[in-house]
Length: 443
Image (cartoon, rainbow, N blue to C red):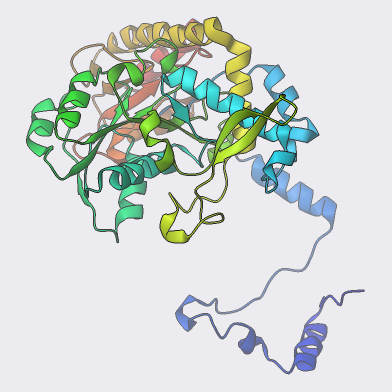
């Protein structure tokens, strides 16, 4: 039976038996990183722990009417998604280290890859990545490897969280990273015409971008390809239900955050990153790629076609250091897309557009509120220019029951009054009206 030190005396007895002191246990931790003492409170019972955690959880405000977006979205999730994903063969499945024995898991990943290819129009997809930001970083590394160049151009209209992640990952790498400013919420073509040169590996854009604006990057793809660079596009998957696909714009690699495909927001995760690419780049893709074949009995079978990971090949030959994929989240996304189907997904996307444009008209009709950018080419997010600081307004509206949007001053200079508002298919006309009334009362 294991010995558990419940008291100071027992702890000291155990340390003495090992010939150690408490200081010895933490000798490898620099003194400046150590806590002054370990004066922990007395232990409590399981019921007391549950009650305490329930009190803490009760402080979360989960009943707010959500108009918050910025990369993570409050979409309706059919009950069938939860029912399917809670099955033990999915919920408890682990990484297939003997893949050919895990035909169910491999088929699920294969079907997910097929869904991503259908959604994006791309030739191939991998078995998913950790989230939208790391997927975009991996796409950039793919481009660097494929072109053997060291310069990357990333627009400031790309999600600032993703840009921060890429800057963090590349801080100690020999990569020239340029971030040209957008113009009126859109990519400034003139800036790219000047910046793209013979050392450019990739151009990174987003559609719809962080401000919700929709663009057609076909001309930018042509501009990049003319100089031998690749076009990487980060996408909002729901928007692909009705928008021109990355393939139709001649993108080389497409990534995105899959949270909106049936995965709850859950205070930030777990989510999944999806990735698609052209066929010529398939051997540069990170993680796994599941393929379909036939076995010796001529029956359909699934295999890990590509797994160029450090666990399988020499480190210097690996496409990335990714060691797993978000299999359960990926299967959730596939279940969501399958349940909605080729008619349901466009309907959800169109509802988002229609309701967002209704909210735009309603909110910009309030005295003192103006649109931040010219034009109305947005999907389900738009930016308002308020007559006062957006942070103040958001704080006031939380007290009235609304998560009213995202204050852009957190990531962008000179946008103290800018508020990013998101509307999904879940928001009703009545809720939009109540938000307008609450916003007007605060101003």
